[in-house]
Image (cartoon, rainbow, N blue to C red):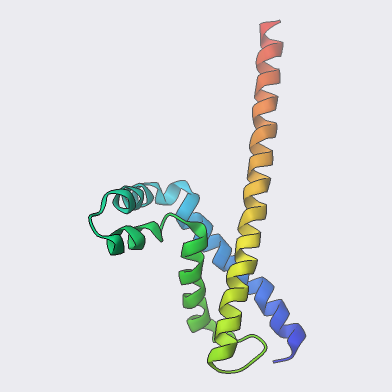
Length: 128
């Protein structure tokens, strides 16, 4: 696969990885299972159980597992063929996916701030 195509795959394949990791670790649709995992990650008796449950609460950690699944599904390799290409692709995909999630978090925070400021202004105007 030509290098330009590989880079395109890298940035496109990181999108669903980021989407899945963010949704599982942040959105309301998975709130109850996430709260259970948070509780188990803090109160399980063994270190292994605490770490396994923590994986479902951290977008960075979870993105590694989503990446492994996507690499198996797509057979994507970066720069080299074989296990080295999978290894490079895996870490590159995690890195790009986490950049996407960080940008999304900043965007959401900015929108939330604007919404809150607008609500404060509306309340001030209603009091007049």
